[in-house]
Each structure stands twice: as C-alpha cells, then as structure tokens.
Length: 304
Image (tube, rainbow, N blue to C red; front, side, top):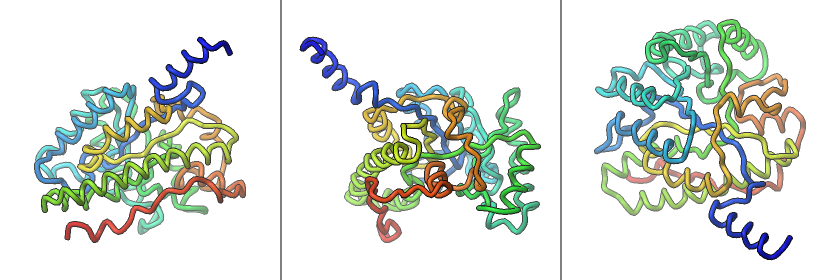
C-alpha cells in the first residue's frame, strides 16, 4: 500500500472507530414495553420511550422492535402513551406475552398460549394495518427440549408468528431496580460506580461476542441486540450506542439480520436462550478461552 493511501486508511479508521472489515450488522430490539422495572423518580414512561427513540434515531437505527407485555397497560398513567411514542417513530411492536410468562414455568402449554393470545388485542390496536406477528420468548425461555417446546413452536407457527432470536445483550435488566433505588436515595457515587462497571461490561461483551462468533461460525454473523425499556437503559443507552458504533455496529432490520444462515440452522431448542451459545452447545463447540465478562455483582445490596 502506498504511504498516502495507508495514511488515508488510518485516518478513516480513526474517525469511524473501526475498519470497514470490522463492521457488523445489528438489529435493535427492546423488551418489556411499556414499562420495564421500577420507575425512577423524575422519569415518566413517555419520557423513557421518547429518550430511547431519540437515541436510536441519532444513531441511525432504521427499525427497533419493541416487545410488549400488555398487562402493564393501565398500571401507570402514561403507559399507553409510551407505546404511541414508539409507533410514531415508525418502530414496530411485537408479542412478549401478556404477563411475561416463561414457557417452562407456565402451569401448562395451554396457559402459556392463552397468555400470548391475551397480548394480541393491544398489538392489533397499536399496529393497525401492520404485521405484529413477531414473538420474543419471555426470559428467552422456549421450554428447553421436548414436547412443550415443540408444541409451542408449532402453535406459534400455525398462528403466523416468527421468533425474534437474541445473540447479544448487556444484562441491562439487572441494573434497573437498583438504579431507581439509588436515584431515590440521591446516591450519585453508587450510580457512577454502576455506570463505570456497566460500560466496561459492554466493551467486554462486544469483544466476547466477536470472538464467539468466529469460534462458532468462522465469521462475524449479524447480531440481534436485546435491551429493555426502563430507566437504567434511558440514561446509559447513549453511551452504549457510542461504544457499539466504535466496535463497528451497522444497524439493520430484524428480518435482515435473521435472514442470515446462522439463524436458520435447525436445532431441538430453537428460540431457547441466546443463539450462539445454543448453537455451540448443540454442535459440541468448546467456548473456553474466549474473552471474559466481569460479573454484574451484588446490585441488590446497593442503595438499601
């Protein structure tokens, strides 16, 4: 490479945060709409939704599926309006079961199916004229292996659903209630410590994800990012997206990401847990030696 060309390439890499070869596709998804976790003092559900939308638009996210637990509607005054904010942004809504019922923990397959059906009127209302038949299993619990898993998947398929898989996440859900407590106590030092740890874990998880994809598939596959629409995500998402951008993220639709062959590989536990770990287990691939992610820590002890 000629010196001038090399210099231009280095300048471009520095400006973008990643070489073009490092770029990878990511579909953005958010669970537990309209209200994930405790509501921090000074926040509203509409404000949380709008902050998410503003951040996603700033980073050029073309589509963000929001997965709804409609049992939350009516529990807080602006919950319904929070879904309106999401829809006005042009982002779609999908099914996360009415009460967030995990398939393995449901009293029966029929009870779980009823919980999914109970969510549908809210989706029909807010997605009028658009297809909302995308489901994210609550807790990523697709029933493991066996009759319940297979029965649920068959029922969903016949009902016209497709599954929103997950391959990347930062455990944002774990911080939500602790953050609300710390806001209530005014403990800024605890909040700052949580943020520092969380951002380190974001970087570590991105490194682990890239290494795992190479180990499992021999390439960097498109990712489906799982987040939750709560107070913690509201205050941390701008920095998380900056770090995603620096790592090479390029935002695409869910269908685009899941059109990759990695998402169409057959397996006995489709939809259960995270995609790459599930594939590694099914194929007997050893994941030892990958970059580590530090533990979340004992957040329950903070701000008591």
